[in-house]
Image (tube, rainbow, N blue to C red; front, side, top):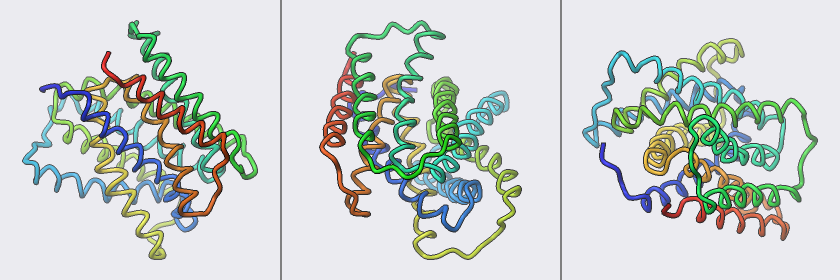
Amino acid sequence: MGRRKPGAEVALGVGVAFIWGLTFLSIKVAVVELKPMTLALSRFVIASAVLPLIALIRKTSLSVKARDLPLLFASGFIGVTLYFFFENNGIMRLSASESSIIVGTIPVLTLLVDMVFYRMRTSKSIILGILLSFGGVAVMVAKSEAASSSSGGYLFMIGAAVAWVTYTFLTKPLGLKYPLLSVTFWQIFFGMLGCLPFALLEGQGFVRVSTPVLLNVLFLGVLASAVGYWLWVMVLDTLGASRSSVFINLIPVVSVAASFVLLGERLAPPQLAGGAATVIGVYLATRSS
């Protein structure tokens, strides 16, 4: 597979962060009527239907070798099923800001895994960028008007962060063997299958939802899942796990800004300063080595 220049992936990474940043609002709206894993199953059924259409348009084969199916299943189950089990349940129990700061630990966790298990030689610029972006997230959400905290909610979000880091490293070798669109499809397909027993245990079944919830589910399925995961694997393939994960820190920036525009929440000066620090950190960590 040919390597692309990092510049395009930086732009894609920002785009994915923007899409995924809006998902906190969409999930908040949708879980009012849909239970967490019923929502997850719904969005990934849609994504599993959309991705083959994208592959058809781009004339990309989705075929994979049987020996790689276990890794595709494992990465899909961890990065889709488990991640959204933890995230959807966590968002139900915490505010978007509280959830965001836990998600903001992903780049640090990824860097630690790279350094411990892969003995990665990381430049001072990349380390500074990761630490600065994480510090920016911490400052940005520190002054947010949080609702009543839930220790269980924090545990769910920590589980989500760990699941995402694991998914990132499991995906890395797959991107070297197959078209990125193919990897994305099979991960989402297996992740969807993994959501099914959880949704059945919730016992909600098929329900009629309001138009706003339906539109948010479509957004989560098409843009946040099908398109978002596909673009994310492209970013991961070029920039690597540690530098790609820094874009996760942009998600709280988007979430807070969207809450200000759509929900009328006020941004405190420390939050604005934290957002600026996050953007600077992303630049430092993703610029050419």
